[in-house]
Image (cartoon, rainbow, N blue to C red; front, side):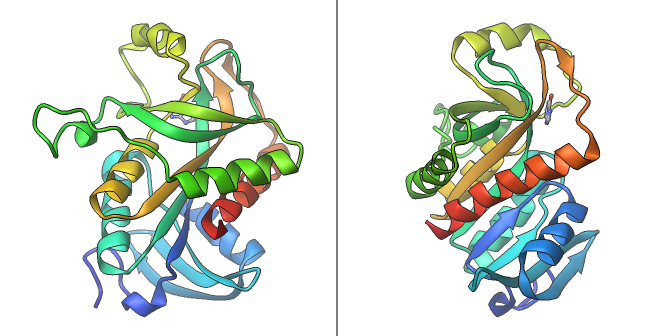
Length: 236
Ligand code: HPA
């Protein structure tokens, strides 16, 4: 049975979902990294691509931008389509000096200004954390390839254009590696639906020294490397 935002049958969606932010990215993953690809849903510009990766059934589907958009898709996938694991593959802005543009950040946890951490249990800020098994799979894969892979907390912000940049030094002091806009929402949806989730992020710019000009070719190469880390996490 279709849901309001995913127009296919539960059997059309694999238990493992790779989730970039950008719908064109999902199509590229499907066309370049998946076999036996089928377009199974196309609602509001968000397509779900079913297929296999190295023989393992997977679905590539975008989240759109921000916690509200991601939460719609992740909730429907976990609760109505039997999805077990979702791996977000995206970008973040660097906060910590320990990370540099081009590095991979594997988000073990996500701080957030979104209400997802406080709305479900009054008086409690929920701990929004990655799946241990996915985290281990991602870290093992990244480090076996000799890549620098930072593991730690990120900050999921409801604002790309924030008027409160004054909070960044405090986040930095607390070891926060980078800022993005979806991981906490994904971890909250996994928590609410007994699913598993992870965010693998490429540092696309750094708050300390402004944005980096990555060529589109380099962007693609970096994305492919992060995608492989995410695939390893889904299979772990
Ligand atoms: N802020 C929020 N999200 C982001 C950023 C940023 O600076 N860079 C990449 N995603």
